[in-house]
Length: 227
Image (cartoon, rainbow, N blue to C red; front, top):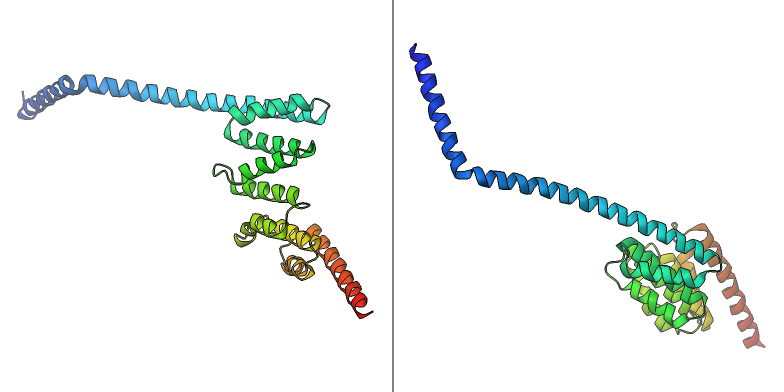
């Protein structure tokens, strides 16, 4: 036997002995850790599958509720939306709450609808874009009965935050001022809409029409005063 062979065998024996000692000391822990990893992966995959299945079922229920709403089964639709709003996945909960608020507004339950939209607007779990939509919807329902101070309190945040709904907010403020015969403020709001290059065309057209009405009202008032 050569010296090299002898040393190699000794080295292998030493390593084998070290591995045995390590196994004797940590073998059970390694097996347990491996089992936990396998169980964790299986649990995660099961959770993902369950979430996907839940979302698919909720999507089907939401679509069915929309179909019932479009037909004559409005009561059944509201019950389905209420169930999703209570226990559906987060996204469908929010969408169902919007549908319930819209149904309340449609059936003349204005105060209830406003409260529902206000709850959505102040819910931190709701996406900011949808919070803004809820704010605009509530303000729209309040337009005929609220004074300008209330409308400004409701909508000013959308304008100050440069929200995607800032143009709609300005339009509602302009309409509120016009309703209360404050032509100066109404003109300021509609002029701000026209001066912004990013204003949507349809809203720009309405703002232009309102400025024409304001100009006509001011001319008529000046003529009346002069006479």
